[in-house]
Image (cartoon, rainbow over all chains, first blue to last red; front, side, top):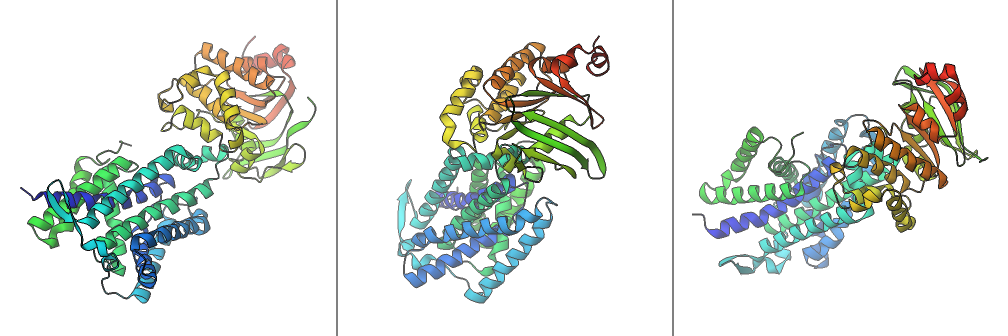
Length: 289
Length: 238
């Protein structure tokens, strides 16, 4: 039997993966099936911004997140409104090239500004060394914090999409953009919100992962691939699915690291993704299209 | 019944290289209900979509209230002026509840939300009963009511109704036209397009007949209904 802390830690990190996956999924379903190839880079960028802000201000990284997340939201909204909106109507593949470029810019700026050495937000958060007892197991407090913040962010997102005018407009534009326009929804503006929110979710996840693990400028691509894995497992467009997909990936990573060694933790995750694609291509909670 | 609310002047529309509307002239006065009649593929829907800004004419002008030129505006700007298109096939947001659909329709008139909700619920009480139901689970007739109600939530000056009787039983169609008459009497100008021309001419003041992308006849509904030749050729009855 696997030690329960392995399962618990997998669940907690998995919720963070779920959050970054939901961001990618929101952008995909919300903006004409557009794939944000720079998704993971936005997460890494947020971690670096929190690092700089926190080490200069001596404020807690989580406090700094209150500033960094809105910055990434604004960056995402500007990218969408200023650039992507001009391309998206021509072909869904053109933005891919743009995002590859943006990813490359973020990665190289990070290399330049923050250097290639692995960094972590943990030294800036003294409580990251604390442990808590939960269900009879001891585990680092920061995992629990990451879990709760991810869960909280998902609840806020759900409430926002369900109960605000912009949220409803995002859902309407996601289902039928052409007709939403006819009801007065300015879809270009709504897409900017959607991309900003998706980016903000990536930013929150990036900061949480940065509090738990080390990160380097080239982590953007693995983060993006991880986000894809999450929504492939859970099913595109399903928040619950992305959460479950994230948790499955998180647990599989922890288990394989425990039994097979750290080198195998991604390998097992990818095998899982391939298995789901083969057996249930619409994802666990996805609908057949 | 005098102010010219909407005026199409020599409108020509094409999809890519294929022209579908030739020099269409059409107008709607405030408070009027106007029918646009024609067979499948004659360009009715295209003309409505052109007014709504979903497609743009390559020639001609469209004026709103005589002073605002709208043929170059985007769909959401035209909606903001109070011209609301209720589409063919209803296109309700199936993943949202009935009430959420209505609230999306109310996107532009949030200050009048309560008033508008009350108005559409009075008009279509069944929507009130089903307000928390997913819109995709409604029957066809209820979905059509929702589509019209959603458009009304924008407090429009003109409603453009496209093929509202498509796939519905005659009884439901009858009920819908009663509601359209009521909406018109509340002061909303209406341009209605339908496959069942007799029913729609009975509620409208005037009618246009469109054939192969050209408007070929314009007149009072009573003229259209009584003219033997027109009945035979365009309405398919004796």
